[in-house]
Length: 465
Image 1: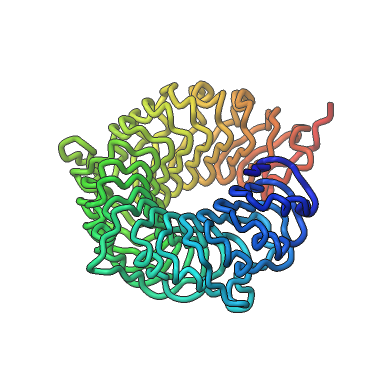
Image 2 (image 1 turned 30 degrees about the vertical axis):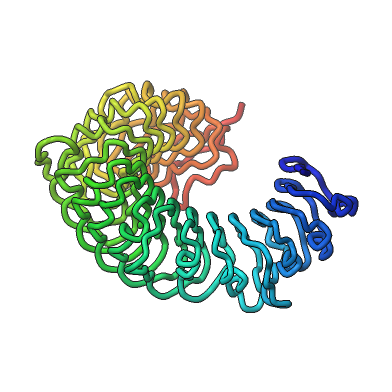
C-alpha cells in the first residue's frame, strides 16, 4: 500500500511508483501533484484494488481505458477542485475487466466534446457509490445506473445538464439507497409519488434547483428515516402535506425555499421535534401558524411562542406574511446561529431575553420595527454576532454606543431608517450601510475608505486622531 494523502507534495508523479507492481492501494489525494497522469501507470500496476487521485493539479488528458486490465479494482476516485484535466471514457472504447464498488469522477471535463456518461458503467453491477457531479453531463436522468446496481447506496449527479422527468420503476425497490442527490440540473415534471416506494430507506433526498412543478406528494411522509429533504428552488405549488411533517419523524433539515407553496404555514399535527434547520422563505405562506405537538394554535399570522421549544440552529422565514412581535419564545433558542425574518410585517421590537448567545447572523430587513434600538440588545449578541441587518425599518434615535461591544461584528446594515446624530463607532467593520438616515457630524476614522451607500448618509468632515 502507498498512502501519501493530505500532504503538500508537488511536481509530477515520481516514475518510481511504477516499480511497485504488486501495489494494492494507491492513495495520492489532497496534494499538489501536476502534469499528466502517465498512460502506463495503471497497466503496470495491475494489482490495484483502490485508487484515489482526487484534488491534485493534474493536466492534459487521461483515458479510463488505461484501467481496462485492472481486474481487481474496487474503488476509483478522481475528484477535482481544478478541472484542468480532460477525462476520456469513449476513445478508445473501454471494456473493463473490473466491477468497481465506488466510482467517483467529479468536476472534470469528461468526454470534452460530447460530455456523455462513461459508457463502461453500462457493464457495472456491483456499485455502492456513484459520484458524477459537476461534469456538465447532458441527457435524461440515467436511472439505469440504479436499475443495474441493486445495492447502490449513494448517487450524486449534482450540477450537470440533465433534463426531462424523473422516472422511477414501478416494479423495483432499492432498500440500500441512502443518498439520492440530483440537484442543480434542468429536470422537470412532477415529483414522483413513488420515491418512497423506490427508495424506502433514504436518509438524504436533494432535488433542489431544478424545474419540478405541481405539488409535493404526501407519500414522501413514508420516508421515516429521512434526515435531510431539500426541494428548494423549484416551481412547486400547493400546500405542505400533513403526512410529510408527521411521517418523517427524524427529519433534521427541511428546505422548501424559493417555490410557490401557499396555504397554512405548517399543518397542525406537525411532528418536527428533531429539526435543526428549517428554510421556508420565498413562498406565500399565510394565515394561522399551528403549534407542533400542541393543540391548534390560532395566531393569525403571528410567530408562536413555542418556536423556542424547537432545537433550531438555523431559521429562514423571510418574504412571508408574518406579523406582530418577535415572541419571547426565542429566548430559549440558545443554539440558534442564523435567524432571517426579513421582509415580513413584524413590529414591536425584539424580546428582552439574554439567551441568544450563539446567534451570528441576524436579518430583520424590511419589517415595521420602530423607535430606538433597545439597550438590552447589547447583552444578547456581544460575543457572537457577525452580521446585524435592520435596514428598511422605522428605527430612530441615535446609533447606540453599545454596538461597539460587538467585537466580532463585521457587517452592520442600518440603512433606510431614521437614525440621527453623530456616528460613534469604533469597530473593525468590513461592510457598513448607513444610507438614507439623518446622520450628521464628523465621520469616524474607523470608517475611512468604506463605502457607506449610494445615497448621502451624513455630512461633515473626517475625524482625525
